[in-house]
Image (cartoon, rainbow, N blue to C red; front, side, top):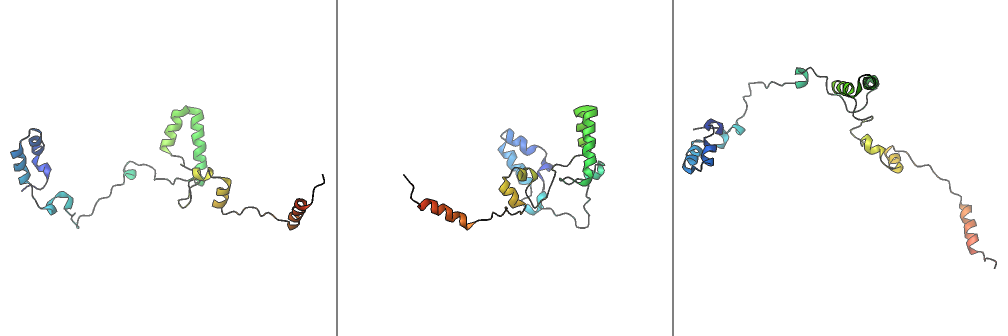
Length: 156
């Protein structure tokens, strides 16, 4: 009995392409009908510890940075500006690939993104910042003056 299709090589494929139905049935019969024997259902040996590979460590890359602006990023941004002025776009691009700049100026996973927050209306920005609108004082006597003007007969 064969467990995996790769053990057959390309025999199944060849029999389908050349319309050899009997050969296809024969090769298919060689495969084990037990689903639990197939590779997708084989459990890993619990005694073998899985080896974790950290590609960043293998390739000697910098650790993954946070998306937001950090206090120590300002000299990095200044360095990118100097690279652009001295070496042009290619030098700046290389510098940005080696030391990536922050993706956003402010970043809080619990809040809206900076781009979205900057494009909100002033009312929504104030609501997001939990600031109250300025309180307007009302004068009840002003309303009395308006009502008096409405009810006075106009001279013709």
